[in-house]
Amino acid sequence: MANQQMKKTTQVQRKYQALAKGKEPPRPIVLNCIRAFVAGGAICVLGQGIMEAMVHWFDMEQDKASDPTVAILIFISVLLTSFGVYDKIAQWAGAGAAVPVTGFANSLCSSALEHRSEGLVLGVGGNMFKLAGSVIVFGVVAAFFIGILHHILGGGAH
Image 1 (tube, one colour):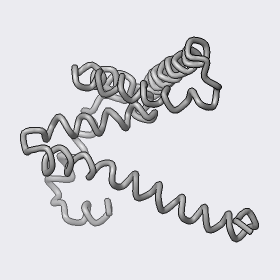
Image 2 (image 1 turned 30 degrees about the horizontal axis):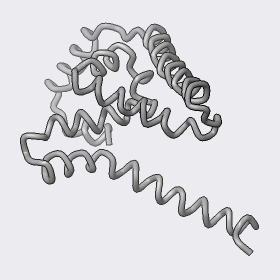
Image 3 (image 1 turned 135 degrees about the vertical axis):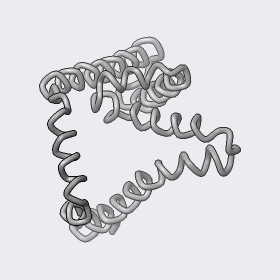
């Protein structure tokens, strides 16, 4: 694809692209990795703290406390996105804030906020599920094939 685009560009465009690339500041890859690690780790520590609080204060079992923990993390992410805070965190942290479930919640909430003026169904609902649809479809298809493999390899119902 990139080669096809290069074939369509003129000599002047190629010179400009080379000049622009030479003027770009170098990316601080190591610093970006450290930021992502710190931010992702902080989100995980927060999640672990919420889960431990569920176990301690609400007498939940460890495996049962994970569902409300994820819901609380999603709620916090949506709340911070609504106030414009999560986007600043994500800009600083990069993949560290984008990869956990909070990043997915941020993407959906941002899409909903951006398209709210178009109405609830066509604006908010339609544009949220443009983003979420591919994730949901991939999850369903992957689960289907894993279920078939599980059944074939002897783990299915007898």
